[in-house]
Image (cartoon, rainbow, N blue to C red; front, side):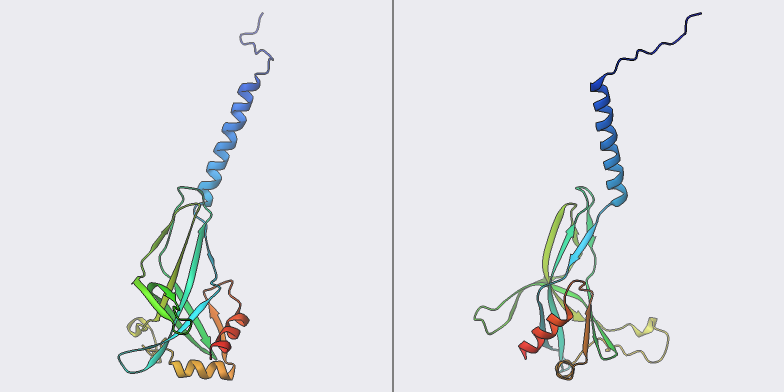
Length: 196
């Protein structure tokens, strides 16, 4: 009896190549889907430290830093930077600042710092395969003591007085600047010592 189905053993190279290409494309797309957006923050090379006088008459420390982001995800895998936070440690105290403005700082005469072009800091989209850079002006933010358990909550604990900051540099208790992952602490101390 003759077999019902016979398969010819001829190799169709074009069909094999098409199959391999299709399989590779599907594998790439599935891998990209599971990887999604991949945003990386590059630490700033320069941080501006500024004393800003507040309505209570006290001068508080504020920071500005150029924040650069890269989304190495494929096109179509977009991301949004929804918040930027900076934290400074002095001795055992932590001072947190949150983004307030995007700015363009410059020094037209080489002596005076100008913080111009202030626009409100808002969530920033970063398309897949794209990069964005902006300079952020940070501000201390009051602590919400209503949601904090315990009686030792101080609403103004994130406000670092300018004189306290300068004294901490002179005494060597300035120890950590975080949320800026690749910035060298030693380089920051050198920049601060040079600016005094």
